[in-house]
Length: 540
Image (cartoon, rainbow, N blue to C red; front, side, top):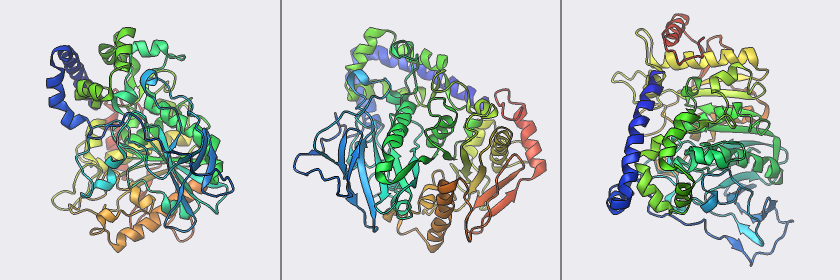
């Protein structure tokens, strides 16, 4: 694929940059740190998550706010909404630090007493956010007040004290595999919990901590896996949910994954990962059409880069004893892309998403797949919205006579066709077109579906929300909740959302939304154009 080849070319260049950066380390650490630390190292790094174990709170498992989970007893707090309870900062794995850096997540370390789950745990290590608290858009980035730490494997839960056997939403944050986390304000499950849906959001390792691959790391792994530590974290969190969610009234046999961008990519890959089979039952993947062609890096390609960082066991030992600050300063110039994203390691991922779907992987998982119509671009000068040009360029471009939207719809339609041949579950295609409230009026932007699906509207955007937004929230969340309950988004007083099976139909979600039929001539035009791309196998 042309987009993938461009990315590989960039990464080969990045490997050279990395080699030079490492060579500079001995003589010029201070200079290098001065150059990159302001951009790549957040201000409030924490060596470990704060100790929130109380020895003054008496354990009382008859109290509905006390829960017995893996590791010990936790206590949450009551939300403003009646009957809704919130638990922030629940550990689902041991801190992946020191000798556990670049290893599969280990079991939770048990504690005595009551763990207070009142505040967000530290965010995964990532670069400093350009958007600061109180600024417009701050609700879309991790809360810096939570701090940043390698000790980040925690999750949040919203639940209803009166509910039992409730469906569970498992939210996977996006952020290009190098940023994000469950402290993002928009990932708020209070409304869903009020409707008897348990909402879980998670942290997982990012950047060089989550996706570094090297031969020496594969050699020490029992299954010879490397490069998928962030994916391993998510699977570990899903296993925690399977074991513990009934304590919160959730049904472990009714779990829906939801996420967009890198989160959507990870959801698609979890659908076809042999390691995630049986851990969830439905999926909503937004805004990552590249999965249709290039979902993960080849192991050899990733390890060739990683071997420059960790050539042998001595280098690995030194790096595991290197502070987060020094590691970020010395390597983060290129880590944002060179070490981002999952790896086709043959263990957690043994084939591409398109190949796996064609062979029937994920065939029992009910699935909504789609995109926001103006994912990464503003409206054109005349107000026309054509779709996400950024993704389309990486897919190979747009042929004359078609729009970016035509390309994305055609790609998703091909995916639905594969699913129809191999799947016994439902497949629904979504084009989310309701414009996100913002001063720039950019249309339905990347990630703009979240606040409507969760029916959560940040006070930070209070000057921009309108009645149309609140109405859209009621509609979108109704479809979403229906899907989470039974794998079908339809319900009373909602326009019918038909399944897609490669027949050119999709659902456009906006205030006047409904089923749409793709233009057959444009679909054929795009298919013929994409078939000329040797790396695009989904149209074969």
